[in-house]
Length: 464
Image (cartoon, rainbow, N blue to C red; front, side, top):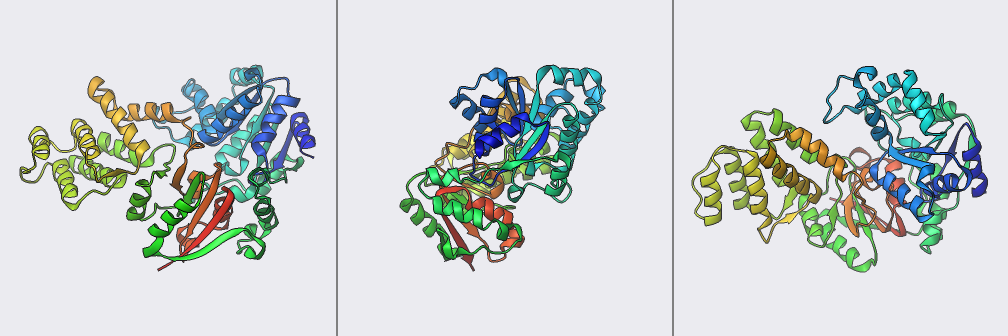
């Protein structure tokens, strides 16, 4: 059946494939291009992790690079718009673009004959991965692209969890209407078969209707481990599971906020990495204020960054960081603090931030929780201090450098469903609040979370 689907994707001028989690969607794309396509295909997805996964699989099967070009929808559109902003009617920022404006501008470019010809000269078809994550502007762009080239899409409506109130996802019904032909469904739970845990994969397939109807699945026949834990005992329980589970493990918390700071610190000390969004949101917010904010706003933003990105800071250290960033306080008694105080009396300057990062890193009791943001900030500040380049420009360049860094090899991590979607681990531990549908996520998030663990899935319901 799978080979029939692969061939159908290659031969169709328009169509869709539905693929539940862990059922071989990446494999389908790579096998389709490698076996049934002789001319180059444009492969579009949503995340840099997805791009990396596809490229790795293409290399594994030794598919010639002449047959494919893989990119994010955002990256592909921006590569055209930033070259031809006038033709695209784009007048937004060039360093940190507004993505909906970029998609609209790319749609405008597709009306231009020279762009149409450039695309037709480059590709014989388009395959779009993870289509359930397309927003309305993205969908409009893909439908327009379909008028130029054969366009086939793959996805799973149950994994559509990225939408926001002012930027909703395209409905699955609209996707079906736009692409018309049902090219088949991938229904073999390869992820769990390969891990020797086929029963969990089969259970997830059987319960898809429950998740889709926003009701609790039937755990009676599941191999999902369930527990009820008091908030106060959560850190100890997570450490116990860490010792018990062999292999890669992911702890999945609330969608819209991070875990309790103390719990995060405990986990970071046990070699867990806290996953961050690709745009390093905490860092981005700091950079914007450092460029555009008042002195008081810069100080407040820098203080927040230090407290968000580090755990184990003592009250005394917190007070010192706050005072020196605000340009306040008396001369410290400790020699290392006094040296910083004497050298920096102007508040939250780039030089002070760079030296404070080094100071905090030297504290043995302090743990860095947002390693990507802190590392990126150090690089940005070093370049800014050396060259005087604009901080926003340096931020955009640093994000571009890091965009293909993979999370697929992270051994222990903490993240939300938004950050772990598309990743696979040996073990997934899901933490669910009592009012979880208001603060944690919804049943689609639950499906995504439960499907991350190949060898085991543990669902912990938290009690006050």
